[in-house]
Picture 1 (tube, rainbow, N blue to C red):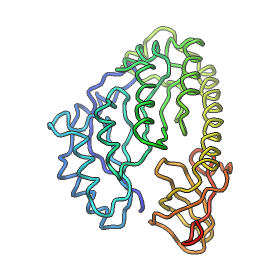
Picture 2 (cartoon, rainbow, N blue to C red):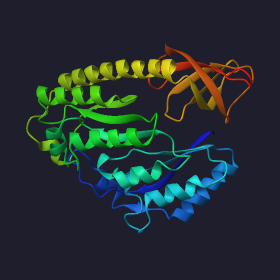
Picture 3 (cartoon, rainbow, N blue to C red):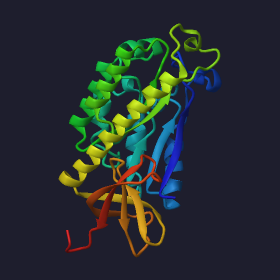
Length: 302
């Protein structure tokens, strides 16, 4: 495999109104940095070039041990053979300026972050018992963009949360237009027995939840298309870490997590290679339905 996941943490001490994970997984429990580094080295020796550090609440790593996520990233960044480090889903409240400044200096940290947003409406976020509002979430995106050139974001969003009005949903749509996520995982709210949200007043009918999910998904597809076209027009030279090869076409991702498909006569699996982006295409077989097209850059043909 080209990419491998390392679970660095389990459990969660948040009590979001819709979630049962703290009951199912318990309190935060982190691996030691030395153990994560050993695991990463073993994966690198096996040919892995990209590691994803993930957990139930990734950014809370070390809250129980006194170690820090910054120190972990610094240690993994120093491992020979690792081309890229990605982080699992991150809550905006934990992405403080000091953390952003430190990770921006690490050469292997990929310019892509998955944000556990859940809503772009402050009133809805408060009802969800999240630890930030919409303004704080937008500032995190702005700070990361200022610190890391070319960074892209993906996110999770819940629509149809109990009490979410049409005006609240419109705020989320406006947030998404301004935030310009590369892609969004959009979920209609689903009640979990025993959670506060399951018995809140203002439960949204299922057809309306799915309507809102479709509207938001359509918006995100349009934004993704614009981002891909912008990459082709303004940043066509890039590096792609190739993950699959079917004998004629190789597929991989840029550091900013743009999926790229190129014609190839030789198998480039597991290699980080220069590519010129040449266009975009719609393809439902890919995770987000659309990809960039490209061609390999040969020496003297840049």
